[in-house]
Image 1 (cartoon, one colour):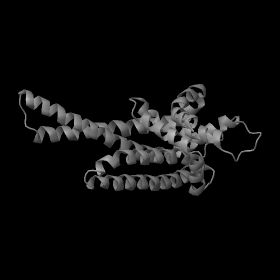
Image 2 (cartoon, one colour):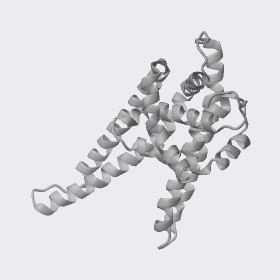
Image 3 (cartoon, one colour):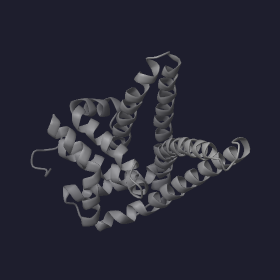
Image 4 (tube, helix red, strand yellow):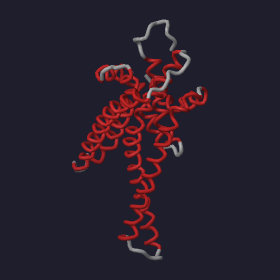
Length: 253
């Protein structure tokens, strides 16, 4: 169990080496990368600008040491809030917009793992039809994630124990969501149901827990945040390929 957890945790970081070895995958991440960069940078800039205007408007100004300390304290809180805002916006909007490209990337990774060669011709009509369905399903998952976080936030209304319960439960919910999110591209491509996906996640609980935590850690590392989504897709596909028991015995793992 410990080995599975560690393998899952390291999988998003090992995906970097996979990407460097299989450079054909890079063409599948350029558009998501640009989307993620724009979403992340815009959210951070808007958040900092908004807090800066609030601080300048409502925070008393002065040269005394206590005003400097207060300003530093307020800005520290502001930066932390912006980071939370960026995380949720990046996780929700980035995954939602990039979801059609993530399915293509997952398919390409599986082809590499299976030893298949050659690329299928790109069909814009098929891509757009699939993209609409993928975005709709992605929107459902994102809505569930937001509602879950909102429900957990209500724990703060419970005096005393609420502030202790919220952090670990919010972490567990986020890690679980990330595991569902990135393995979902494999299962949706193959026309498998959410029930089948849940069964897979339960069968490989520790592996998926480590994977979700690894993706969350990746989101916290500067610059690598921009690559988090494609690395998550690559690593989830590789973990599924290695762990899936439905493939024929002769297929390579």
